[in-house]
Image 1 (cartoon, chains in turn brown, orange):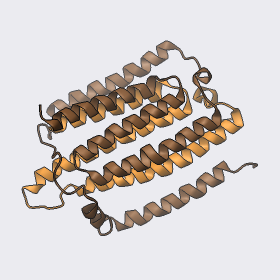
Image 2 (cartoon, helix red, strand yellow; image 1 turned 45 degrees about the vertical axis):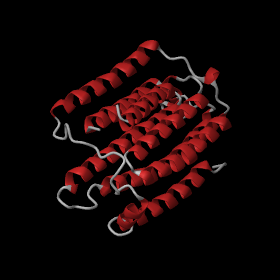
Image 3 (tube, one colour; image 1 turned 180 degrees about the vertical axis):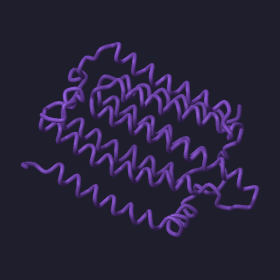
Image 4 (cartoon, one colour; image 1 turned 60 degrees about the vertical axis):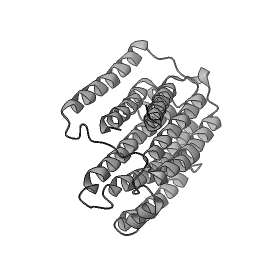
Length: 167
Length: 110
């Protein structure tokens, strides 16, 4: 087993295990910490595929900024395992069964997929490097890039308006 | 590494996210499960971009498959905006009802 294959399986197990822990943890703070572990595993997958820019942006934006925002809100609300409401166990079972059925159907649909057996390029190829991505971003994708800045501005204004006290 | 492994991994992450959305009642955990589903899609987009880079690279298309990684970049942009607005709504909801239980809020008033 080569190092790449070993790393792929290791990161996959890490991602799936911590994703399951996100769902089953009773304490919301633990859920956030497991979600950070999932994001680290997914970033590891990106770096394994030599998508270096996406890997680092995933770490900075998701594991850094967004998860800190989640932790901040959870600690602001002073939530812990006791504040979690009790839920009917049949409803939980129904949720898990419907998620599992979707997984089953989509994996079964993969059986006759056109892309089956094609190889993913690991650890080389230069499309994930920041120079090439930046060149494509500022030539072919410059209009969506500018629209994204407007989106950020509107999100910022919206957050301030929603979060304002006294209305 | 074959593309099927990545498809199955992304599908499993996505379905864990769906099961989380369906089983949990805490609004913040539901939001985190949505982030998990977005990340599963991102992983699959990067895997497909690298797959097309190999497939089209034989035809001398140098930057084939770069669109997939730029889409991931834009998904991250939208996700960041979505999280900031969504968490503001959840904080507002908590301030009005002192609860983040979604079953408590199913009538969309009080």
